[in-house]
Image 1 (cartoon, rainbow over the protein chains, first blue to last red):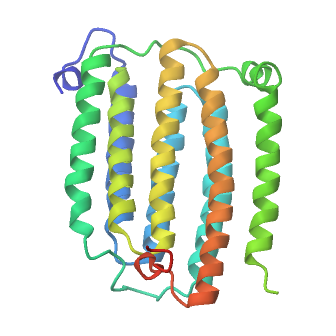
Image 2 (cartoon, rainbow over the protein chains, first blue to last red; image 1 turned 90 degrees about the vertical axis):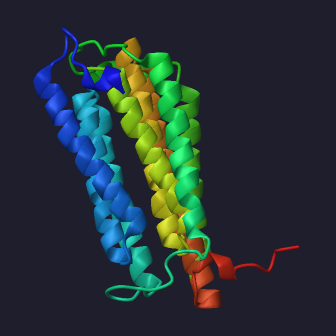
Length: 174
Length: 99
């Protein structure tokens, strides 16, 4: 962890402070998502995490991805989640039995996974600096999408269409 | 700004998401934990895109967002169907296919 705490010469202080505040809020909200006893509160804490991810994208100079994140996740996916919670008649207020009987097994698994990932990341990228680049131009992104990634782009259109039709077929009442 | 900042944050989100998938019994909550995992991966992709200067990482992050939208739509439709047939979405009660 030394590499994270010790400041180097080229550190942009404002960027680091902003990153730290947003990251702390995101971790706190993510822990609340997986531990709260109230399904609706979990969905609302998830909004904080997703908004934090969008803010981190802006810090990482990826403005188009950040806007897509806000539109798709906070705008569309969260509404789907709230509808799903509503239609499965979650209790208003605290609810017992949201966790498995063996839920405590998840703690060592999560901690071991984080420890392993952190070790590998610090070993491989311990003191790599992110260069100060300006925001990535959206034109470059669209050139990629309509250039070498055209076939995957068309494929994902079919995936979305198939998912929409499949969701209607699954959810409608016969 | 150090690259490990983003990578460690993504690793923490990923681990929290995995804990949620293991610990939660409610199917909607498991889907929410999967969203945490997918977001951790996209954060990594964008950080690597910034590190190398190639924009492909952002393209992949957008693909992940699109796939996540499709996954949530189908997943919630399946949860609704299970709820309509069984009146419960507790994952440990769906065990007919157990050998």
